[in-house]
Amino acid sequence: MTDDTTRRLPWGWILLAGAATFALTMGTRQTMGLFVGPLNTATALGLGQISLAFAFGQLWWGLTQPFAGALADRVGAGRVLAAGIALVALGTVITPWMGSTPGLIFAIGVLAAGGAGMAGPAVLMAATSRLIPPERRGLATGVVNAGGSFGQFVMAPLAGALTLGLGWAGAMQVLGLLVLLALPAAWALRGDGGHGAHASAPGGKRLPTGEAIRTALRTPSFLLLSAGFFVCGFHVAFLATHLPGVVAACGLPLQYGAWALAVLGLFNIVGSLAMGWAVGRWRMKSLLSLVYAARAVAVLVFLLVPKTGVTVLVFAAFMGLSFLSTVPPTAGLVAKFFGLGNMATLFGLVMLAHQAGGFLGAWLGGRVFEATGAYDLVWIVDIVLAVGAALVHLPIREARLARMPALAPA
Image 1: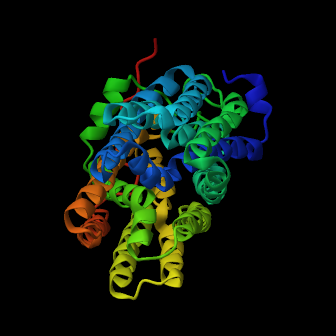
Image 2 (image 1 turned 90 degrees about the horizontal axis):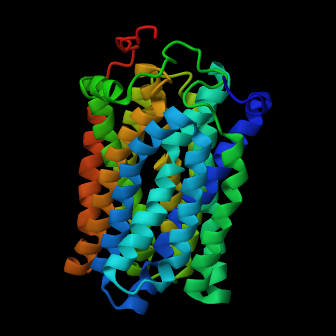
Image 3 (image 1 turned 180 degrees about the horizontal axis):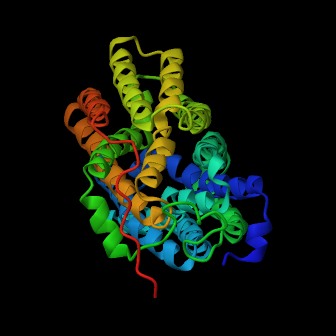
């Protein structure tokens, strides 16, 4: 049975707790692109090595989510979220003291990224979905997702202001300490390991982790969904890590990089909330195809137009509308396919595919710029992948698939 205090919390407070947690963890991670240049200057490691540390973080963020999800399905989300929040804070605070590639990989890629994976969307989406009424779940995924965007909108200019006042190292450490403000939200989202107040809906029974994973990996629609999310990870990680570098390469002042990240986060709030509303009204696979096709068109236009401050901010705004708006329909399809009992685990698997793409996007951006002095080749790859993602969602069977075999009574 769910903890009585948690059950008595109004669903609005549950959503606020989830959104606030994602705002602080995701907001901090998404501002790290502002520190790529200062880290490169301070360590003299080269953009390729710095990008490798960030790319490893993208991959590790994804690798931790299936395991964090499985643990949250078993013991409840609260403990997993609290541990993740603490690791994000620790990794971010010690990063300025790391002067080698292994040190940066450990701080950024293992501690901070691993903690963000434990307090990431796989655990948050499942926790909130279990604790609110079924008719609110589409809205819930949009609100929690928008929280991450709001965090980016607030954290990016805050990081810029802190850098001016404290230097880049002090700014990064203050951001790390701010993440600890999410600890009370972990208490609000605690549960009993997969049987929240509203987990009695169809498909709510939790299966053994291995059985759930094997069933998902034998489901073609789940594999197609994961392939599309791989492309989303490539796109998101490239923008989060290298958008300030793209702005600098256009010859624009440094502050445009921070503004572009802030605009990206601001408009992603709109996109996430709109998508949370839309998933209850249109087929989720069609919405995903539309988002990926729109990304391909937007990047192509950006490559062709003159690069001015207005152009960059308009591009950031359009990208923001689609930036993480893929999360609500993707999470919704996982729940629709298999129910809520193993949602944290299975959505964690989809997030792993997302972050495999994220590793490639973050790493390839730095390598291509070092080799060519421009990001154009990465943009072209991004367009091709986005078109592929738009197409790969079309064969997905959105009607409820065969339900996982129920466990025999003990």
